[in-house]
Image (cartoon, rainbow, N blue to C red; front, side, top):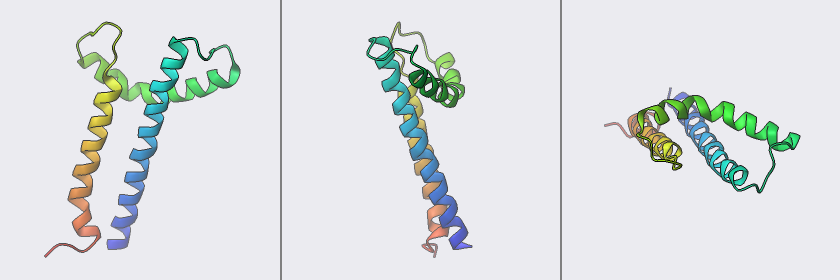
Amino acid sequence: MASLLQGLLFLFNAAIEIYTWILIASVILSWLVAFNVVNTNNQVVYAIGSFIHRITEPVLRPIRNFLPSLGGLDLSPLILLLLLNFLKIVVNGWLAPYAYGMMY
């Protein structure tokens, strides 16, 4: 049972880390497009941007709807990063004692 929980914790942490990097890539790509460093008419840039947008937008949209308008400043990725780290800490704190045999 402990090995199963350790595997699940590993997969959960890996998924959160991968999604965090995708979210960071989304922010950087949006800046590069906004400052005309990259052109979305390029098929590779468009494909990467479309993939990242489809992965991150369903999670960011409810956060954007909840936050007040701050003009051109979008804090939703920052809020999502904080929520992901909070979730990671809570789940690891809850399951790690069972997974690594630290329960008395």
